[in-house]
Amino acid sequence: MKTAVLTYLLLACLLASPAQAGWKPIEKVETYAVSGQTGPQLHASMGERGPMIGKGKVRAMAYTNFKLTWFRDYQRQGNACVLVSARPKLIITYTLPKTSGPVPAAVQKSWDVFAAGLAAHEKVHGDIIVDMVRKIETATIGLSAPDDPGCSKIRTEMTRRLAELSQAQRQASRDFDRAEFAPRGNLQQLIVNLLMGR
Image (cartoon, rainbow, N blue to C red; front, side):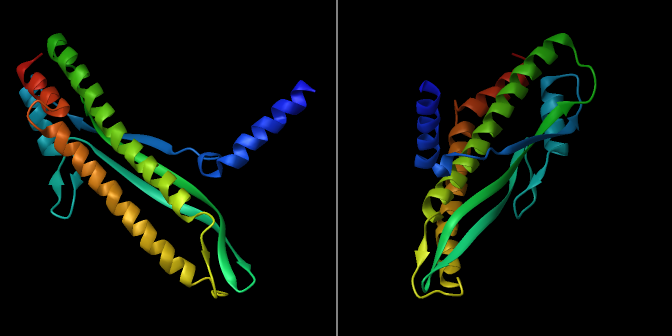
């Protein structure tokens, strides 16, 4: 009897929150080599070798990128088109610096603190991306377009909604970076501590 009740409750939970069930992001870490025997040398090496990002192709210390694809099930219901289900495949790639050789013990200690803080910073960018995908699920699963037997109108509406959520994700990432790099911001302090050998 207890097993049957637990099974029922589990199924109820899964059915109540389809957008939250059934998938997790795939997270990958790629590294690029930096070298130096002091904090300033390691910082300069990141500036020379870090990933190129943006339209202007500027170098960053680290970067979070993602690839998002969907498996969507559109169904005709009468003359309408309904998005019955949508399952995302999200791959998040974190590009982070890694020292290419041995460094003095005191510098290594300072670098370890910096590298851990930088990785945590990029993980927040990853969380912002995951949040966007969850919001896409909520905004689109169950979406219906009347008088749309070819399921073309519904795709136009979905494109509009996805564009809004994508813009919101980019803005959230920019706002986070602005706060982190501000005077006394977390990442700004991590850089200062690396340069000062703390």
